[in-house]
Image (cartoon, rainbow, N blue to C red; front, side, top):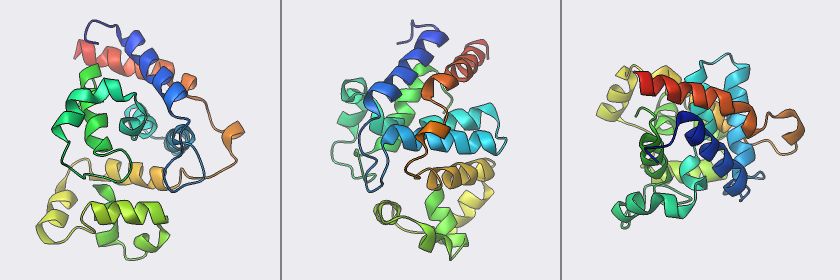
Length: 192
């Protein structure tokens, strides 16, 4: 994919979301595509920067992209159980996006610093948290707390949590509406 233009890469991402995102969002009452679109819309409504809107849209791309696009990464994760859903979907997604030119465990942080946050999680999110090792403690918490991207990651997680509402498809922007935003971001990466 390295020889494709930013517009072609963006088109591929949007097409992948549209074609392969119709599956169930494990443990929720909406599709994977609708979940991603709601997360991006939540980011947009909050006035987030363009790269955070894109991150919200693509945060679960590792569960959506065709398996043949992820063969090498999946081989490296064969004996791993990094997450609920498609095994290692965070790593699959990040490697896939990195291969397209994007620059390179918030739930654990939020449950550690906000006791009521755990109670607000869906059953599927609680199960995912359990597989990730539970809330951060000690050094993990201190390290995450010092991360300069902490606030962005927390915001993304909260948009993700709120993106599980059935029946709002008509009021949620479609994937194609983000095409120019993704293209512009990828063009900036080529120049940088």
